[in-house]
Image (cartoon, rainbow, N blue to C red; front, side, top):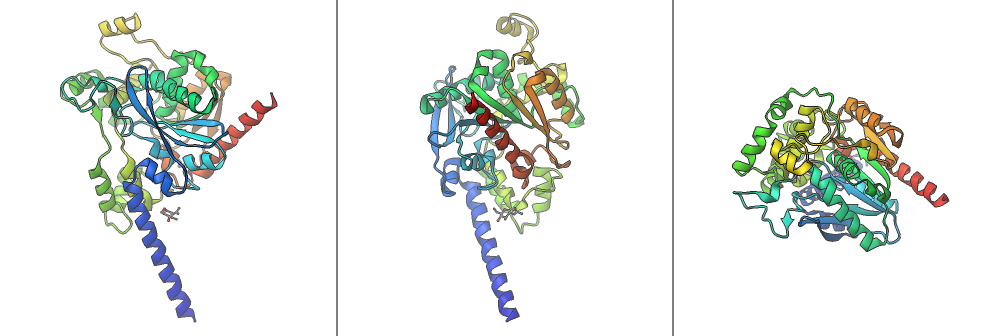
Length: 396
Ligand SMILES: *[C@@H]1O[C@H](CO)[C@@H](O)[C@H](O)[C@H]1NC(C)=O
């Protein structure tokens, strides 16, 4: 009796593990539309053209009549960030389950938005495609995406969820084009990234000191694009980081840092979708923010600055123009968005911003998209705040 029950349990566990392994392998290789459809959700792909000719892909989990939520990924990431944890866990699915019309953006230059009406991303000598930072993502990509949401749904106003660089982009938009404040019902900033008054990572000092040299070198030698998505990375992840692989602990440490709540089984899925590529100036722009101690527009040489901005030094993004009700979700162990810097941002935003500290002290930057407990620690609070905004709006 006991042995039979034991055998049965063991067999079931083995079967479950096999099924999970199959899912992991499949989910690592599927692109976002196939991944979402596999889990029984509808998925639309929208090609959106920006005013300067970039062709972006928005992934929509549609909900007729639902309030639209625009969700914007982080640096070198993609719409997949909000899906890889799977149904019941990932923010994209949770928002859909809560009745929202979910629009997952892909910023210019990443795997899903590596196209342009005239410029060729693979052209190596001039690399004109790659001459952008998150300034352009905020100023030009977001308006194009909002316009598509409006045309398709008839709604001018959306909730916005940004992760890391996705938070930077909205702050940029609202500072440069404050008329867009009227287009947002609320702003949920996960791991907000703007001011870098505090820093503690010596590894970044080199990058920061030499950012302008690196800009010149990158474009001279054909490195305008950094870390594009690659099948090799997917295969490496599947080979070295899967359950049972001897290198999995090392792999986990390299990819996830010292996180405790990551589901290591999913490592190959994370690596199948990340990194998803970016322009080198997205990184250098953050380095400039730290180097000059200013949250300001991209710094070129003084003559180019003069031509672009009418002054030798790039202007700062004026946070007084940000008037959207903002929720800043920050984590105490986030090494990329240090909580001290989030406090600086909160001071600049004043009464428009509410601070939400993630309860678990060890929560880090990647937990916001990959943490096994991201739902309990962050997402449920985001959706509750969104609902509260909707209820208040319907009272008026
Ligand atoms: C980890 O992910 C696998 C594959 O999706 C899943 O079967 C398992 O339940 C997850 N474990 C935890 C602790 O969440």
